[in-house]
Length: 182
Image (cartoon, rainbow, N blue to C red; front, side):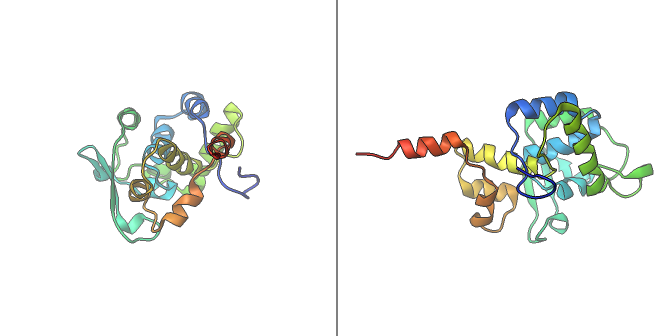
């Protein structure tokens, strides 16, 4: 868990996610922003760089120029729950998350402040903007999705880097040990 900027971002459980989206995040914009991060496994900077025309045909396109490695464009299907958050948020600008006075885009710093305030409202600690990415990738892994598929969605260059994102619970470790025997 992340403490004072150190460690990995917390992986959120379903109860924490529900509370965060129902009670913590108070505006449709904030819910849409973090829902994109959760339901696509993208980085907050990738979500903040989205334009209205990046969302069409049931997919979100993360342009090569806005991804971390700037290596390739990736398309991610829009989850039905994400579609609900996007429908509730209708910005009147070309960029999806405009900055102050509709100029530029919302900054990573402001997104972090919005999330910290939301978490403080509901009493969750150790959460950062990267928590949504770690949560999404861990949930897909726990659901048995092949790592290669998760890699395509997340945009990781290699499986080793992707595996560092995945949290292994105490229960999973116990189950692994209990499978040993003859």
